[in-house]
Image (cartoon, rainbow, N blue to C red):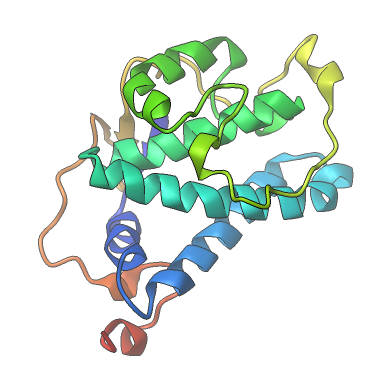
Length: 198
């Protein structure tokens, strides 16, 4: 998969596990992801999917931290959560929201199979052990789209590694090195006063 990676991603990584600001960053990232992916959905389906996506993305924040704890890079940890989301989109027939074609599902799973198996994540169960005890809200599926899937927002051909597009448009295989002195106040949902509070 091809992802972007900039200072906000590094700041979010640092801020997510920090006291005081961590939950605010978590909530902002959930809002951002829900908004981004709902924009890819047909307008008449957006509101019916919102609650499901909010809870789904909230659970993937725990996946992201667990992947970092397991030694995955920032780009890899973030890609793992995006792969989870694409499994969920596929299962619901939301092919217009997918970031890679459905014929690459297994290739993306296989790259992170060790992590996914450890946490009970499968294509059919994208959250695995990260599923909240109370579950997440259901949302209407569009299974008919799986018969002849269209992926207007998908980029194929990036299933063999994590590819990162930098701010200057360069594509780096494996991601970038973490910069020194990352400022958590650059994370979404944080201002400099909050970042300095911890």
